[in-house]
Length: 358
Image 1 (spheres, rainbow, N blue to C red):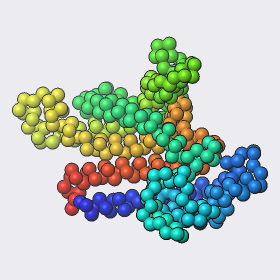
Image 2 (image 1 turned 90 degrees about the vertical axis):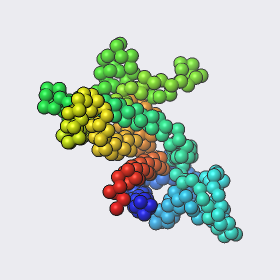
Image 3 (image 1 turned 135 degrees about the vertical axis):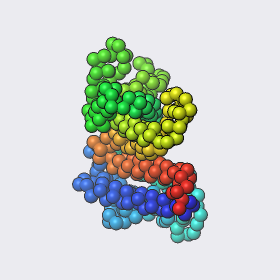
Image 4 (image 1 turned 180 degrees about the vertical axis):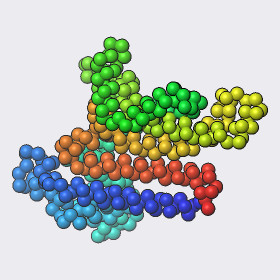
């Protein structure tokens, strides 16, 4: 089992390396001068030269790539030359630990450095992510909870009333939920429940988790702003959970031990609760774990339409302004979380199912 875990971690690190490589070269071959993006309309030749030197824009692309990997790596090389890009900057590496320190270079253990925003006055990308990612996480968790609760419930109802009108209606709704794009559903829900039915729902078309009062003195949590985006983001995983629960439960209900339970006089509710549902949850758990990671990445358009101040909206804003460090840092974070969640799920299955250990 330990060998399998090591293999999964190794493959995942290779995958992450590939993602980082693709992201770097994809965004660094785009037309435009990053130094000019940072200075906007206020640049002069001396400022441009200083910016290019500070951020290594004056170096060949291959050297920039190696420097980017060095920034991301938890173990990194740094020169003691103050004019070098890899010079140990206290502002960049506040939590670093020197494991090798010589007169020519240092080797550090540090947190990954995602560089600085082009458009936010040199604000660190890690700080931008720290301010926006919690909102995205809250939205993703809320969406997956909605998908689990209503998906399993509707899946059970659909299985119990197999081939009936109720089953057909639930199947139709599930198909619609899978086929409707998230951005269209977001616009539709915002217009219908936030505008047309606002008098009855008291929901807003747009709004984030944290809002400022009219006087600008106090920040408070507006939970009702979470309702519409979480429902919209949860529609597609809900549809998947419904179908998986239905099909898996029907398969379990056809097993011999279920017939034995019926012959003992157990009610349908007791059979579902005690025997069938628990054994039918394996494919559902797999889908939920995968969808949770996908929701972190798929919240981009939903957050933007609802003006939800999360990482997804930040990515769209960064794309509009070509703020490459924020785009690259956000994609690296999402890819890392996706890989971590998949490793965690694989480890759980390896531990639970002895057959996978062979």
